[in-house]
Image (cartoon, rainbow over all chains, first blue to last red; front, top):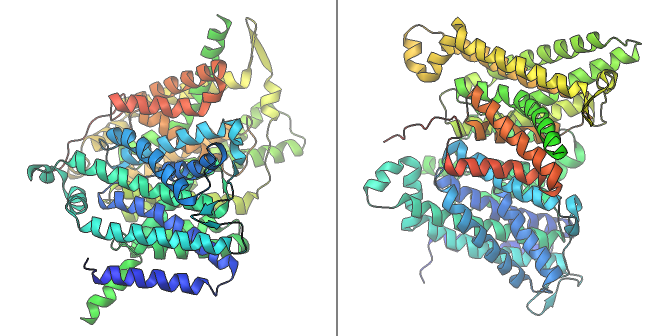
Length: 313
Length: 299
């Protein structure tokens, strides 16, 4: 298999992060794990954005992934992390395949609002499910990874290594996906979908596949968050959480497969400090930064890198 | 039979409240094509302003009911108009001509900012202004007890709905606005000052949101986050009815209100679920809502 430059650097960064984590304090390892999990969900939002769709309801799949891990451990007695994540993906893909039939008929704000409505439906159901802890949610079982137990001294590190492994796999896949015919057709649909139809490509089919894939990726992010945090609650599906994913997606931009990871890392780190230093001004900071990005960096942080490269050559 | 009456009364009271909340949202979208997420914050601002002013009034020994309503109206209209003007002139004006979806994200940013501004001004402790609600008492309809304040909300909602209809359909400005709705560029070419009309529309829409909040303040405890909860309800109502249509908002409010009341009286655990389920069901069959108009796709 021939690897291109992006793929080699992705593998390099992943290995470097995994090695650096061995020397990092636990809180940093945990923050990194959360950032990577968030980035996976954001990746789903970015996939939709590349097709010109903005989802204010990606929390639906995030939550499904998280709850699948929680419920699978609790009721099915599954403890293996990979099996739990797989369960989440199966459930999410099943749901997305049904919703996708409807969602791919909508564009612009209708897509945004309908996706929001579906995630709020899940939120509404979970809040009223007293057996599942209602708004408090419930704890996730102690998980294992193949032959390793998470409840050893190095549980946090194990979660991070798992997250890095999953993120690398998905990033490598998406890097190829974005250059595949479906990935490119998505961008064409964003520009002008009627012409795409003229060229003999079914926009419905392309958007459908893209939607289901984005959901699956979001589910992995949710499962990973649940495994790392050890807890799930209905806020995973609340619409402001989905709003944060849109924020991170815009922060990073859609230009590169690595952009969501950088944006999610900045987001998670800034939030860790902002919530501590100014708990009542955190959302305000978010809002102001969001406006500044839209005004001055419409292609996201990633455009800073590409611009520099362009100037140098 | 009793349940049916209870559902109808509760449903229409809830629908009138929903309409109050959603009216401003649909007016702004209809004219400006901006789906204003910050509408929830205007609702919360109106509620906070009214609740804190009523608190001062009652703490100062006031006990006149009519005075309480004057206070609610003055507070809500002032804060709604000022905030609306500030958002439109200060921010949205710079963004006209961008994608609808980008405007949605921009107003989401405004919502986030306003949420924290309110926390900084009013803190996180709840505000109560239950006095007008308690003072009006209850009446008995057959064997059901209904709060007079809730019935008043119903009347206010009908009055506001009728005034909006009159304003849009029977006045000169309304006619100009309808021409903008039909074709922004042609109306501009015909000499309509579209920018000023946008400012007026946004201020009116914002004020409607603040009035809804002010009227609701005596019914609820005013806490951070009420705006975020309310905005998704308002979205569900206007999307069900068809974005940008006053009639649509009214019909949407009634459908959602009755559906929720039915659910509360028969299957309370489905309360939140039912609102969005109705919206999704309508959108499956009418992708642009009951009274919405389809837009031609660009080629």
